[in-house]
Length: 227
Ligand code: BEZ
Image (cartoon, rainbow, N blue to C red):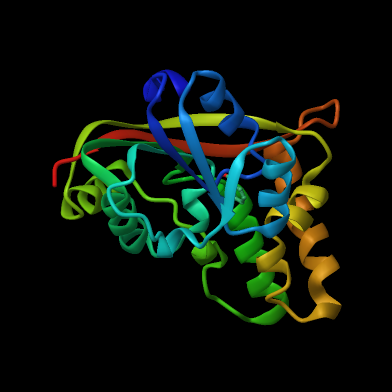
């Protein structure tokens, strides 16, 4: 991903959804002047503890004006469920010709996990809404269309399967990363939803040694603001 961005010394770069700054640090090491933003105060505190310039900011409400040569984002855009607002803010933040390089969850991301959660929630509560609605996981065609409508020219965009080992187990993954879905069901059912979804997933996402793998799909793109 950093190869796609190819940060240059002296460039002004916004790291959108910088988390605790682990990747932001690498942009700084390349000589760029980097600002990180994240919605989570804890993450911003972590980034500042690394000595980085970081601000708490909602990615839907970026308030920069032609301030950056590039906007970079890793594993964050799928949490921003109003993508057109994000793209408009990134366009405003870039100088004309500036680039937008990002990677995040794409179409089919955690598909098995979402299907298992939907099935168990429907069985236990009768609710039939799609729990994946808390994330934005677009196809390349959808995301390209949104970027182009926002004034970007898309240089390249790909969807990449990224099966990813889970250090703990599926129950732990669900508790952490699917917390908004678990908390959307009545409290007395949450542990059952978690455990029954994990049991459904065991045959497809857990190997014979007990190692779990999440079925991640990543969309990666490079675009430039055509103005
Ligand atoms: C991810 O693809 O990084 C992701 C997917 C679902 C929940 C959290 C993270």
